[in-house]
Length: 114
Length: 115
Image 1: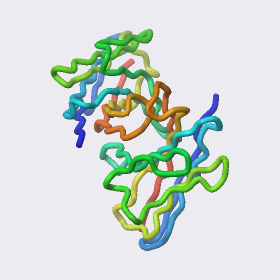
Image 2 (image 1 turned 180 degrees about the vertical axis):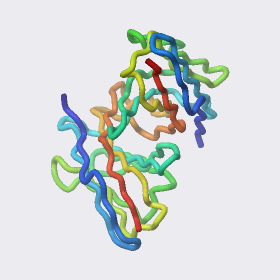
Image 3 (image 1 turned 30 degrees about the vertical axis):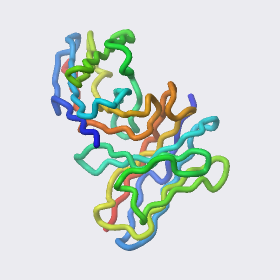
Image 4 (image 1 turned 45 degrees about the vertical axis):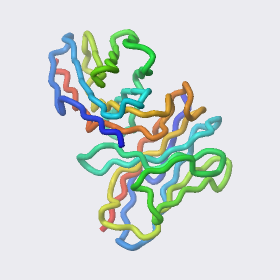
């Protein structure tokens, strides 16, 4: 089955700096790669996703890149703010969308230092 | 803003007891899911449900697990005879479409503790 590895497990950056979280996946049939943000006491919330037919997607301060050949995808957050502090999960599936059969990474605890 | 709600937020049960975790998906959604996260480990897929039947399930979802949509609003996960290793955070999610282009929304989770 699919295996998703996520690094780093903890990332501390100064407010205003950029943060990058990286994930690799094993199943070349995976075609959907969402990123979730989880704040304390809440469920995962989708922040951005990318499908295998594109290499990059951007939404304001958040961007995701996908390299299908190398089977890795990354989350980029620019101009970080205190409210960006949370646990971020990458995931992969062959379902093309939704939440069917997602395989998650272990999560990255992002800490924004004021 | 519509949201997925789960009850209870925390459930403590004795080993061997049956437990039912409840979820109210977003009202116009048609696809429903359960995931779990054992403390310190990855979020793991359990099951997806559409049109009153299971559409996909993982190896974790064995005979002790079952799901049901007993009425038009609730979606439940039943664990028949709980084991210590069932202790985890259980997340329900829903989406308007399944293998489509729509976002899945997760609930806040139910923390299940088996003692």
